[in-house]
Length: 591
Ligand code: BGC
Image (cartoon, rainbow, N blue to C red; front, side):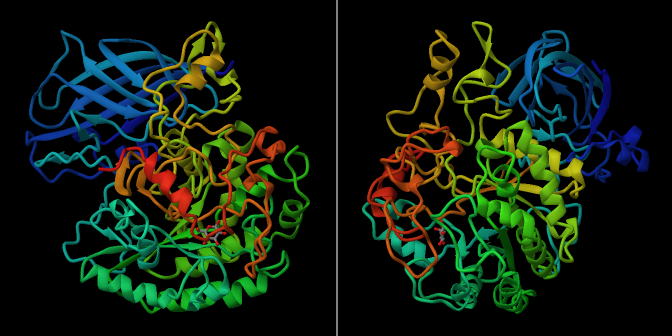
């Protein structure tokens, strides 16, 4: 049993200002901004978070220092990056829902004068890693050591330290989504608006997928339509109308694409890395460079599903495929991702976000650190450096719930841990928010810049409608408890194709939670994940039985039914029945 003592400081109190305070900051904590506002002005705080950790549990001491006006009554809030579960707490009272914790003062320590401190402590259990929370908020104000004369509820843990009042448009900002609108793809928007009820969401921003070489110029295909990249960028400038605008583009054309499945195989063979570089990435980079000095902020989502496949679907795993073994051995996924990062990262207004799978894939201990390591390897390949990576995206085109409120990793039911339920199956995470925040910490500890942010694709993870549980399941068994309470109603977490019962998730929004740059709809809702039977096409797409509702599964979905909707068209083509179901099951519901 190892006993580790770690201290993390959030924000800098004035006493600790300077380089020493900076070095005490943990990764992901706010940069120490030396307050320019005089002492005693409105709101501001710093938090010291200290733990004694014995491997499966820990005791934490939390000291709050009030840097603003005197406080009478306080609530401190944070999200745990992992599955930490508080068992008891002293000098305050607490609530915990999933990863989210709120602690309120006890009767005797509610007042904190300016520059005064109060402390509370707690015991907690955990498994996996025990990273410190990314950020704390005192009475709704981020504890970043700054004193804010106008209390800012924005929970972004890493505020842009550049106070330049007239920024060069190509200066990268900390979070590109803050203070910017996001591009609405007119092609998707028209498809959505043409559906009954679709007008409610037709003006939401979605990703523009460059899913093959022809899409760069526009190829009139059902997947990408008539607009090429340049057409989209020109239209984006119109929408921007002089103000910052995020343009979301998906880079998705690796050699040997989609090595563990067939539905989204692409046009390039496993060895065609030179065509990927010369005919795909280079032309995209050339076009984007023409828009470098504009008000556009180009969010480039890099190569969905590719790197995680090299961890989980290769020899030595029951889920291995020969195609993924080839892509691991020839190095072309790593080389291609590195090349994309380096080429696009050289453009001042491009923000690269690498695909990081989702919790129902990478959340297990075996997969988590190994994935972070391979992401780091790719970020150092083909001329890339980790500073070419602005962040990562979780849950792209997947269905994993954002927050499961009715069960958590640290809980036990009748002495049986929730992790042991068939649904959780020893995963360290139960939802995408906890996963994304935890992975962010892991990525920073692997060497990525501490300012990286996460995106979560919430396009289809709403799981609303009348079947949505309103409370926990019965405590008769751990399976009854988890299954009765979970929002995600897939038959198995490994199911991914056109899932029956899914709904639109959180609407796209900036800086919704600590460490999260945005909720986005990267997958355009209503576009198929794959055909439910073999359909001839000239896009390289195959037929994957995970899209066939009669399929009884394989090792990657625990040999379960696929849960796919019937009568689906080829991946990327409009699937009206699915769109209708996504509207019906939207959560939050549509107005
Ligand atoms: C397809 C792409 C499509 C994307 C967005 C993927 O599954 O393979 O062709 O552009 O989904 O719908």
